[in-house]
Length: 178
Image 1 (tube, rainbow, N blue to C red):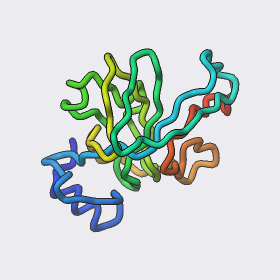
Image 2 (cartoon, helix red, strand yellow):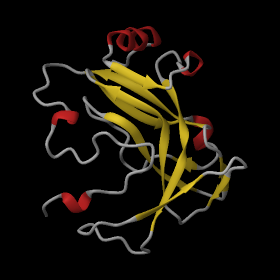
Image 3 (tube, helix red, strand yellow):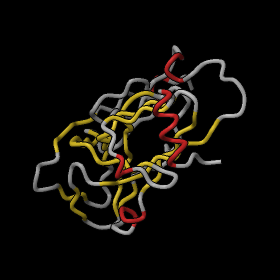
Image 4 (cartoon, helix red, strand yellow):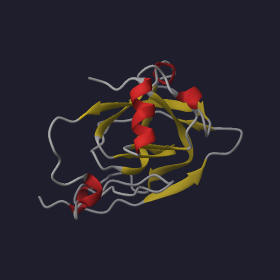
């Protein structure tokens, strides 16, 4: 079951869902539109190593926009800071974004109960496309959780992506043991 617009607003009033900045015009019948923040990043290395810390370089999207190119993997960030304390958030691309050939996440579309922060976007494009800070790129939908939660994501000692900032965050795979 997905939360409706009324239920999302009720949960925001209770503080179990937080969206900042919040604009009522962005609330759909069962989702909330999120926007591209001003920061993008790319990895410094051409070949990434899952066992090593792969560093990224940040750059700000200028007011006149920035052209993304195929075969380059970009990390972006949502303009919105979100918190979910009783629901599972899912981030999906908007159809208008997809119709421009923009994918906003490779695999990480589901958040955890207790996630607090800006969402890092895993952006790739099918052909060159100019993007702008503040443009709508995706939508959050919320699912209720059945049962009690023992440890929320923001309470886990090993939560690698808790409290994500206004800039994209690189892969923390290297912190895993394998």
